[in-house]
Length: 619
Image (tube, rainbow, N blue to C red; front, side, top):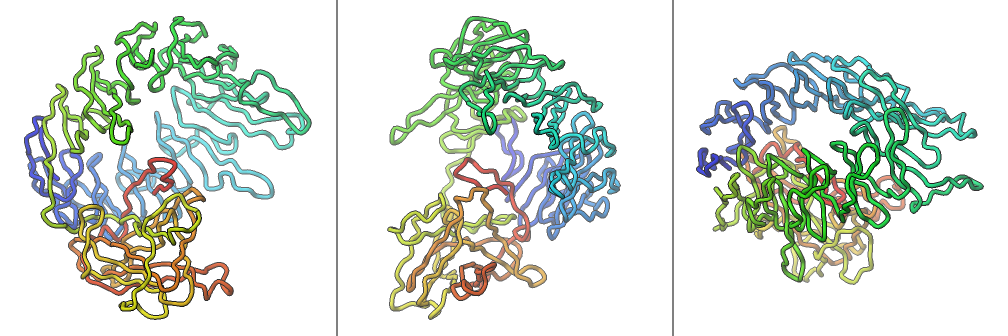
């Protein structure tokens, strides 16, 4: 990796494995196995010695050695001693820290606690206020629920104390939204939960009960909040039945008065710029003002994003999108197949067309237009940076290549089509996610788990090198291949030469199998990890029949630290199934083999965000 300028000229040669964005004149960079900091000439001003390094903020940066974080200044000197396993960057002179038991607090630039680590959660500070949760929030004790949620200032003093509210949302548009729990002793008389709002001093503005299946469904916008209403409430034996088809949405003001109450509004957006989109039973959108009156009789079949912003909104008419002002007049006539939800950035917006691909499938191609409707770039981008133009350039993908486009719509840089002349080793500084996928026999019925694998077991030939009468894992670096499309890999075998079927716990066909390495202290440590799924359907069992084996691949890692590696695999031990109900799994290990890694692989997990319901993993 390296750097270009706004004209596409290389100003720092691509000689680094990893570089971060420049911040306060410096950028974290890794040229071999460790991180340092370079200046705008590409020279190291803080020499590489860290497992991992982050951007500078307020003159300090977080760096890691042996998984321990600490702050350094721009001379590379440690600022102060710190005993917290998790720290965050400084902002407004304070940094969030977390203890080994998961409690949060804040320190100042001398490393002193200014907010003690007594909170289970501290949300973002907004205007000097933050919502916090205590360590006893919601526990059940003697059939009573404890509510420890409140609001503190920058010194940790309570603006809203514990015990009053069940939930408090972040400060938004001048108010905190709160939930008041129902009183258990008053349920016979019909007491229900209430929703309300506090001002910035913690004073209750108003609250409203959830009686008759109505509840406040949004924050305050333009002095109004969206409320879910119910056409009628029919009391029946055993309670009240709620029917979705007879609920509707309106708006309530800061006095607790319902000011927009039309039973035909089955859906409503929040108000923005004193305008809100509402939808009727015919699925048509139209615009109302804060008095609930129609701004225009024009209707629209769809809207892009949340509504009005900077005096305009994108709406769909006759199958195409255009841009209107707050009086529903078209500034740009409908002409686009779709609008990216991020809206207008720096006077530009992003639209897309549907491009017909293989098997009659359609893919989105994005383009750029100016706020006057003139096309800056025809739809050629497969994806683009949702934060928009940075330093005058937009990062995007065009024809599968990383590309930079300037504000004139011109491509100023595009990656070359690089062909690997030889397979390279995988050089990373973080723990790899588990990748050993397998499946049982091809004809087996559904055994759970959404993930499927074509890695079916094979019958063991008469001549083999597998350990006899057991289940074994073997790594063969001498049998090469490639993994993840381009990296060198060693071959791995899992063989069952016993007389028993061997079962394995799995998540979406991913075995509990990972690579380990000897650390600096000569102890075996994981350099790969197995994420957890929140979906119960992910968990299932795989079976390896007697006299069968699986074949896998594992990367040949590259790094500064020379060590030994092995693979650990868990299986359900049939010998323990009848005598040990709480732990039936046994771990077996492969042969040891020589290798190189980077020390960050012993501890660092990259952020990972699921890309849909079929990817229920989050770390």
